[in-house]
Length: 130
Image 1 (cartoon, rainbow, N blue to C red):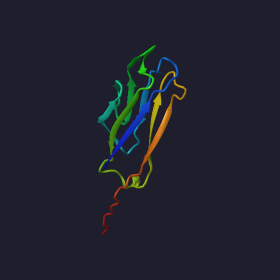
Image 2 (tube, one colour):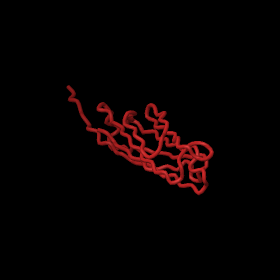
Image 3 (cartoon, rainbow, N blue to C red):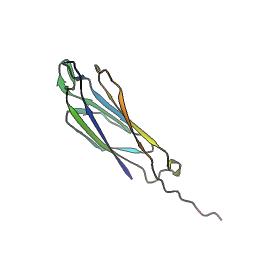
Image 4 (cartoon, one colour):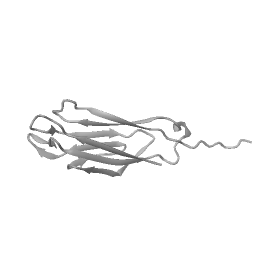
């Protein structure tokens, strides 16, 4: 089974600099496995240094004072994670909370986060005993 995530964000800053050093971080919870090849960013350029189960995107739009996201810029990030076929039945019905965090050096709400919950339905199997 796979889970598809979609994160939408908008830089809104009254300063002329936009969102300086804007970044998105997301650690996909185990036992899900992030498909690194599925990460897609639209709306602004970003450096993707994601690895393992961690998404790390640093936005690189030229703005006054450096790079990040220009004021009013909308970004959509999509990605997928998979539930391994051999996952333990102990994960059946367990809420997996995935939290994406947006940060910017000059943002009032730097560290703003939103969470999504996925609850896997893992088939439970039994083996006959003699």
